[in-house]
Amino acid sequence: MEHTPAAAWLTEAANAADKQGPGNLLRVVLIVMIVGVGLTAWFLLRGYKRDD
Image (cartoon, rainbow, N blue to C red; front, side, top):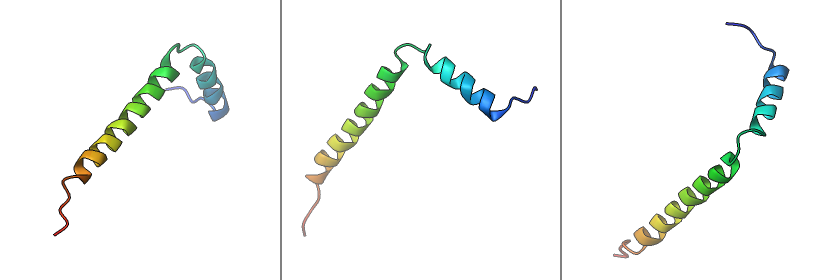
C-alpha cells in the first residue's frame, strides 16, 4: 500500500466532497430526524415517570 501524505489526503477529500451531490442535505435530514426521535422519546417517556 502506498503512503500518502496527510496534506495530500485532506486535499483529495476536500475536492471529492464537492462532487458528492445531495450528501450534505441527507446528512442534515438524518441528524434532525435522530434528534427529533430522541426528543419525542424523552417527551413520551417523561409522562410515565411516577412521583411516589
